[in-house]
Amino acid sequence: MDWMSWADPVPGTFLDSAIGISYSRGDAECQATVMLETRPSHANRLGALHGGFLAAFADHALFAGLAAMGRPEQAAAVTVDLTMQYCGSGKVGPHLRAEVELLRETGRMMFLRLTLHQDEELIAASTATVRKAPVAT
Image 1 (tube, rainbow, N blue to C red):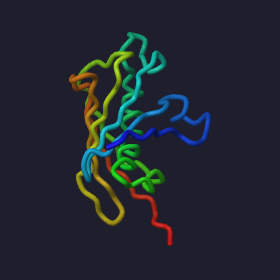
Image 2: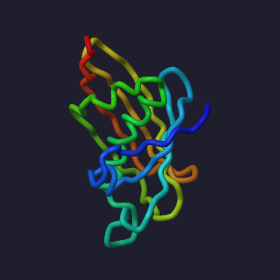
Image 3: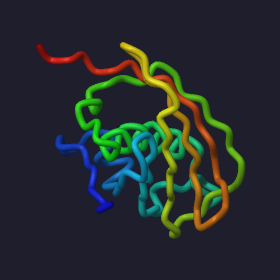
């Protein structure tokens, strides 16, 4: 599969300024990979990737991953809940990789999980519930 870029079309938004451009690809019907180049503005005062940034990237990666799975209409969906488990310390410089999986889908909701990695090291894991975007009629 080819990589697609994902950026907020509205300049100056949180996604545009805090996250930046990510790249995603569909790996299977319900799986995708999302990549992001880390930068100094993603660091905390200790020089590691900030936990708030990791949570924001996880939230972003859910939607970039859904688009890569062939569900771009879900860019208008909303996150109902998101949990994070921080498993290691991320570094500025290496790319951050999110592996996104759609676990289950109902009429109105999607249940997802993802893991965040740098190189082969697990940095964080997350689960989320997303309310699907309304279908245009």
